[in-house]
Amino acid sequence: MDDTNQYLNNFITYLQIEKNYSEYTVTFYKDDIREFFSFMNEQNLHSLSEIEYFDARLFLTGLHEKRLARASISRKISSIRSFFRFLNREKLIIENPFALVSSPKSEKRLPEFFYEEEMENLLQACEGHKPIQVRNRAMFELFYATGIRVSECAGLRIKDIDFSLSTVLVKGKGSKERYVPFGTFAHEALEQYINISRGQLMKNGEHEFVFVNYKGGPLTARGMRHVLNTIIKDASLNGKIHPHMLRHTFATHLLNNGADLRTVQELLGHENLSSTQIYTHVTKDHLRRTYLNHHPRA
Image (tube, rainbow, N blue to C red; front, side, top):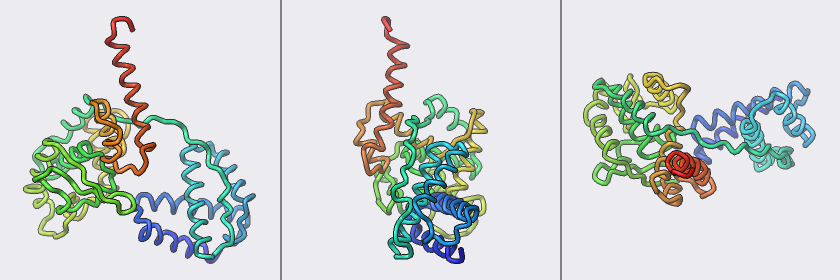
């Protein structure tokens, strides 16, 4: 298996440069493919060109035997299929053994989101006058106001924020750009952070990224996840927060308050409407509960 690691490195470079995937996404690809390399060692397979459809099926069977969630299995198969497609494109293998391996149908899980009362508790947990607290409040307000992904937030630069129009230029997946408006709460929190606290955190450093860590460097996506987990702990809410919950909350609250699906699709940066339609299940559940709670003949 002398060439496998080099092939993986080439593939990772392709994901980073040509596909412009985030560091978080690339890590998943890398881990999934390395898991397949371990399987090759166990099966005494020495070359990627040796892999056949039977081997791919055997690997899939092993994933099922580990009782992994269907979504995890689908992601792993998709990662490895993409890897072999890349090798085929580079003429390093003749056929993609994973081309005909079908991923398990994903569970129709509704997106998790916070209720408005929970959001108030979370926002109160961000309050404070220390530079880090002001930064955390601005970041949290921006997540809730725009529904942007954590990788998009980590990549924001000062020039991307237009305070005169209260909009932010977001660079999404595949280098696609979109303008997203934000409201007065996010506007005030961002102005306070950028005009006062950001300079205090920068400590004479120089870079254009909006959010900075306590050392003055750019705050990474991983750092943002840590900040959000700290906020939920301070708010005394059960469970762990992940940035996508704020994205789900943004979409759900918009739809619950009358926004149309196409607008939400554009704000989220979804290429297909089907990606946004899952939120209609959440809002239908909200309507049903409201009806049962308030209609006299329910």
